[in-house]
Image (cartoon, rainbow, N blue to C red; front, side, top):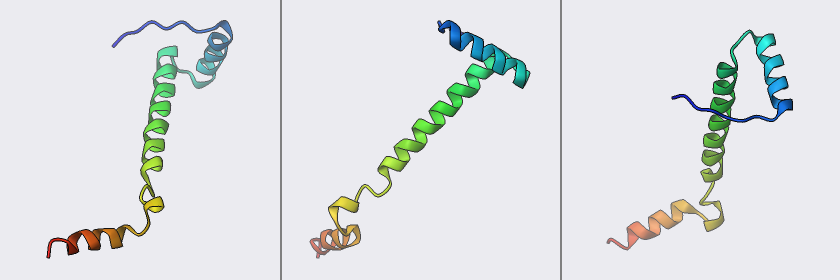
Length: 71
């Protein structure tokens, strides 16, 4: 997909310097930055879910209690 974005002049300058140093195109730099941002967001979602039952008490006991209702 192609897209057009507008960047402030200071970001354009910093991006150009980075691209020269890395010997990559601006498009590649933007792809890499977007990839890193999305990976962080996905990881933070998993981290937020990790330990979600902690505040509810002992999840093992809750499961056992629920299963006990079936008997």
